[in-house]
Image (cartoon, rainbow, N blue to C red; front, side, top):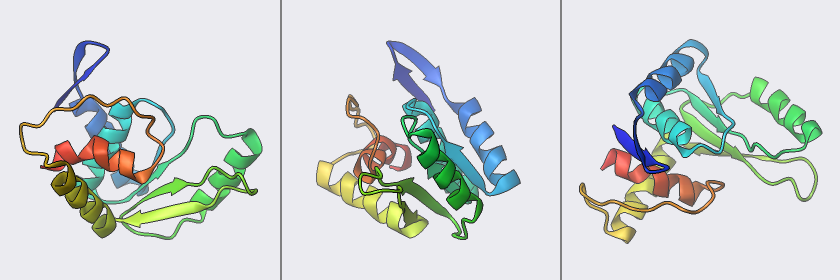
Amino acid sequence: MKIIQNQQEINITSHVKLAETQLKDSKIYVVNTQNYIEHIAAYIAWTKVGGNIFVKSTILPEKQSEILDEKISNYSYENSICFHTSGTTGVPKLVVHTKEQMDSIALMATKHMRWEENTRFFEFLPRVNIWVLAYCTCTCII
């Protein structure tokens, strides 16, 4: 699979393989980058091998990041993608989406946006919520 980033075509196969290895070895893969290629690669790997993906913001204050790291270490879900809230009312809370929920979100977005196999899009929104992740990943599963 190839993605265009900064006017360059990038083969993301190595990114997917790295995420697959991490998911197989530890059953959890933390995505802590704003690089959408890593997000998409993690999602593709997750659909192949299962496990848990935790999408962690790169701009969290250190204390909140430490608290979330502790929550991740006690994580007990299977085959899920986990995001966190912004923490505006205190400590960020974990938001868990199962494989079935993510499949449903992707299917709804695909139908709503009338995406087809040859659909191309320009992604310009920040990747901080579940709908944007579905938007970024739906073309990977059509």
